[in-house]
Amino acid sequence: MKQEFKIISDFIIPNTRVLDVGCGDGTLMQILQNTRKIDIRGIEISKENSQKCVGKGLTVIEGDAEKDLSQFPDSSFDFVILSQTLQAFLNPEKVIQELLRIGKKAIVTVPNFGFWKVRLHLLAKGTMPITKNLPDEWYNTPNLHMCTIKDFYKFCNDRDIKLDKALALHNEKTASINQNNLSIKNLSAELGIFLIEK
Amino acid sequence: MNKDLNIKSLIIDRPLKLDCGQTINNFPLAYETYGSLNKKKDNAILVFHALTGDQFVSGINPVTKKEGWWSYAVGAGKAIDTDKYFVICSNVISGCLGSFGPSNINAKTNKIYGTTFPIITINDMVNAQYNLLDFFKIEKLFAVMGGSMGGMQVLQFVSNFPNKAKIAVPIACTSSHSAQNIAFNELGRQSIMADTNWVNGDYANQNKNPDKGLSVARMAAHITYLSKNGLQEKFGRKLQERDDLRFSFDADFQIESYLRHQGSVFVDRFDANSYLYITRAMDYFDLTKKYDGNLSKAFENTKTKFLVISFTSDWLYPTSENKEIVIALNAIGADVAFVEIESDKGHDSFLLDVPQFLNTLKNYVNNSYLKTNDETRV
Image (cartoon, rainbow over all chains, first blue to last red; front, side):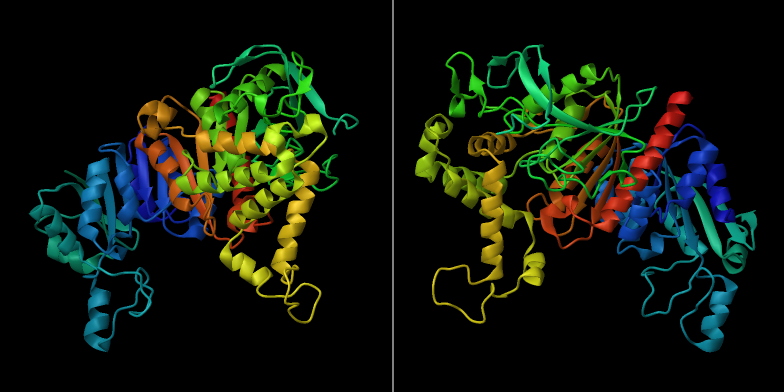
């Protein structure tokens, strides 16, 4: 199992209601369903992936999170998951607000644009960085709003969004992020994983 | 016309109070089954047919001698695998393939009902078919499914009986018939009624048949089942067995010839009055009416798992209308999945060989069968 999914899974309390926003082919949903005995739903924009999920018997709706999250009532889920998708939205700020409206808590993971390899790539080569987590070229990337761990940390603080947990992930190793080590983790981690609530 | 054919039918002796106020008794409900009911009786799927469908879902239809209307989806090894599931389908009341309808004889007058037959609603159709559960001694169906008017019946079924099906698959349908769809149905009805052989619906007693009217109704409706792109690709401006235009009103174009053919084969198998009654039932369908426009309330307390399916090129029951069902279900936290299948075959996509649709349906049904049975064991 991907380390990221393992951490997400650890955040989830059994027997709760969970929504996976941008659930892809349903891999994480299946893991959570099997390990956490939760009532899990998904929303996915790609037709191919939606059909894969539904074919697995998963409760997934084909849709665009930027428009279709509005159909879910306030606090209708205990956890809402957004795994490495935030940067692909036209309006990430509004999506975060929606996540916190429909979920009592949200789990957001962001590929860190402040990771040293990304910075080095831009500094040394002068071209848009391509890494394991950011595999696309500038002209075909779905990522519209890249941010760093520091950016997201600040984003939450500025809006009084509570950071229940903030973890930095690098090479399968995780470390807690806090105000003191923020700059270091912003340099050393590939992925930030946040458990947030209003 | 079906007296000599092997049509299974049960007589429903429980009185059925219709929405129009009348009560019907001891009426026939014609049905067909495929596959076999297992010992636990947990593998039954009730399929609802669309406007011009019937109980002959799969295999050769004994009346038309053609493949059943959902042969692409239902059969051994198919999306709905009759080696695993017990598929039941019945002819809707007001239909013309053995179930109680306007072509039946009214015992009181000894004449064919015609338009003296009571107006039937989708709710009435579903309530009549519910008797099949008692007949087969099925406590809970594994699934209810259907496309178009069949989908409307799926929604009505779950609304009426929130705990009688584990999964529900409404396909290419709506929760409330739109003005455009009522308009198309009215066009069809007016076409039938304009035929002098319709004689106010009494044609069967007078040995007449409004073939022309029914055939035009079918032609008009058939266009709405296809898509502009689909038609253009299949027919374009191709000419029918001729090299040039004839400067006449013959069927110069292939599309004209095709539509005329569709109209003419339809009148051989369908009763004009049934067409009036069933289209009326569709027009009256509005699941939100009882609940002040709040569709969610129609599904309160249901534990049924839904899969809603729409098709990109379906402009008769477009994705937006199918999504309204999804939205209403999500608003109450019901278990609902949704996919929109890419297809240029229009509304008819659900009846045709559309692999993405059939594969998704197959996998969903099979995995849900495993899952819902796991849950029952726990």
